[in-house]
Length: 129
Image (cartoon, rainbow, N blue to C red; front, side, top):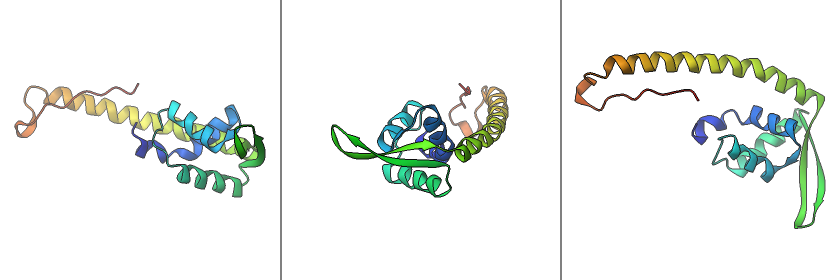
């Protein structure tokens, strides 16, 4: 998924990463890239983190660093865990919607394969995984 689409789900991604292991902002941004959410602007990630902190979903503490200035380390609160749990069924539903879309797209692409509309290139089938 390109960064643009995945960034719209930054909130639950960050909650999950913090649930797995608390961390500081740049650590979380690096870990987002491992999930396929690349090109996240640090300013955007920090705005989301600050919003989650205002909503009491995460707490932050300053932790000294041997390699530079202290860093703000984010941890999930009970409210944050509940919010993450609420995201799971929403994302499961989104996955079902995307799976349905891709099935219809692939069927339409197969049907259009012999003669692409307008003489253009033939559509490619796409898989979810």
